[in-house]
Length: 324
Image (cartoon, rainbow, N blue to C red; front, side, top):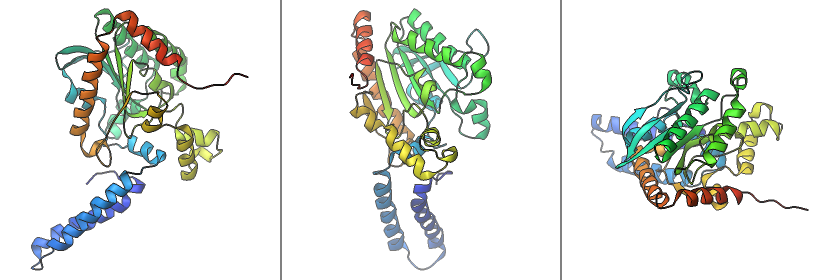
């Protein structure tokens, strides 16, 4: 049983608790409880399908933040081989919220870069909850420019609530670091494939998110602001704490993978096991690896000029507006 249960999952785990109790009692009692156990298992599976197949945008946001969800290092260790991490931005320090280095995708050498979150409180403090400082964003750019120098494709993983908003980050040029990444990535002369594996919050996500192919896991999200922030600012919900306001904001922001695919902002969705990627990570690793391999084969056929032209046109046609 998972160690962390979301509010909408509680009915499932209440039944699971009863099932676990029946299984413990059954060997100790002379009464055969097989029929009761099978009936309860059937009810749990039906309830899982009913709940997980119809998640609201806000519920998907909650799944994207689940602490048991696979992190960037999990994807690196299960999709790539011979990973060699590179540290630091050569200006200030090594920001552990961004991880990156060389690795192999099958037999193709690539540069990997992504946000890293922790799996417990201690790790989250170490990785700053996946929210990079300017030096982390500059480290990512250093690695991408290194990839360009050696003609290596870039594989990027997004999983952050946003860039670190503290005053020290502003003092060290947070906005400029993000803007520099966007400018440089737009003209990077190697293929860039982006995968959103969890949270895709604001500029912290964009700093690693400009690419030729963009994939999202089914229960990830991409948004200019968190639902809590939107609820607090636009819906006047104090601290964004109202569940109704957060749900309303999540719906209004159109932040889910399905909605972004419909609007042509991403290229594909990596489907997750029932309940989320943390219920069967191996399945997700296989699906995402297949998407990365096929995308890389497609992009490597393009000349540098054609690659940059397609990337330019991709972003030029994003968004809808009306001129009076």
